Image 1 (tube, rainbow, N blue to C red):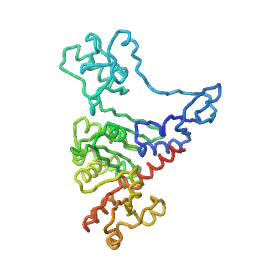
Image 2 (image 1 turned 90 degrees about the vertical axis):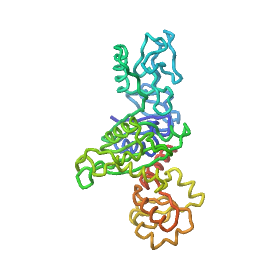
Image 3 (image 1 turned 120 degrees about the horizontal axis):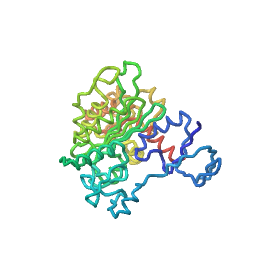
Image 4 (image 1 turned 90 degrees about the horizontal axis):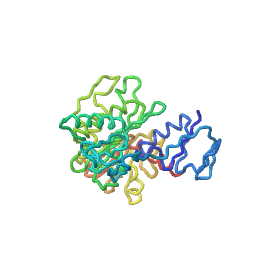
Length: 376
């Protein structure tokens, strides 16, 4: 069926950050889904839909998904307290403001594991868990609700995109001091057939290393990586702890150095100051301020696509061309970040301070493509 998605914002699934959702958007388009962003339906006719941008598109069947609000009229009529989030207020036993009435499910408020505030989280697993908890409370068991992390996944045409905990947008709104790492390892050992790229983004507290959230997108292995990080958040683990997790390994299922372990290694490099990162959306401003962006990939990689204004110095040639970067503010980048880390260590050996573009050209390209798509 020919399908068009009309979205009021600059991207679909607004809870995701742009560089993570962009590969999923591109995959939808590759499979024939038309995306209409930054617009909304203004009129639904018998065989068409008019959009706020003046366009009219044919339509035989229209699904309106214009937002979710709790259906809590029964609670309002009963005089129960409604939380600031708009959902039914409950305590840590799921009791409402009337101690004889419990509330569970999507209409009941959840407590954020990160802020302690009430919020709306519409997840079936939380609803199920809280139903069990209420039964235990009634039975006199010493139980109470655990704060909610918020973990979700969606898939289409074989690709999945998933999130747990906080996004970069949320962390910025709350004014948190955090670090971000991007990585793009394989879903399993590269020499075994069928390995696909796993793109992960991990947020962690700058001072403690405690994991705040993660997002992932790819054709294989996204679900189990997000589940591991969700478990790590629940357990209060740090990004460094991810290095030491013992995960199931066989070439068809993972790597000896799993994507989760790699997230730990990359996070450790940033947390301990071995490699200072910059983010894809900071590059343009850094270049305007005089920072030199050095592409340490190969000639052929650079020819296939390069960041405007970057200078190509392959990592294997960096020692011989060190005079070109001495005394300058340097950011390096490779394809996914690994050779960039090597370049940073090499430059540090020469007394040159350099930073690495998190996730390399791959992350920058996804972010810029999202920005271009949003501006259309």
